[in-house]
Image (cartoon, rainbow, N blue to C red; front, side, top):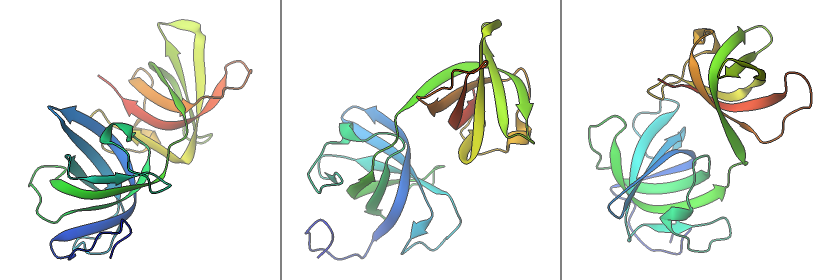
Length: 194
């Protein structure tokens, strides 16, 4: 018997814990949820930051933190989940697999999104400055923590040193900003956009 009260064989199934939902895409009644995980009990390849796109349909059991049934539309990027899915996967990158069960463990912190061009990169101080529409009053300082993810246009992780002034970026950041000039906040995700 599993966490969901179901009795089934684990053969042909992979269970991951503490996975992060990175992207959600819906198409014709099917939901595709890309997750990233490190902890997989039955995985042959134990590389860090594994990704898989889970295919959710009406047979996929989804539960919230309290164990109540929720729908796929309630899932959001940033949620921490445990998942059970088929070991039969496509050869795409990331691979796709049928999801059997998802249990939400933690909902994400609220965030805001800002688009702009990088005006300065400070690798020593661990921050970037962005500017929007060449307006000096729009400059924001985004502080970078060890949890900040920095991504290229294809969503691959890169280092802070790969960012340069002039690049257009989308920054997901804390909803709180200081009243300083320029205002400061913590960046959760910085992604180069085209």
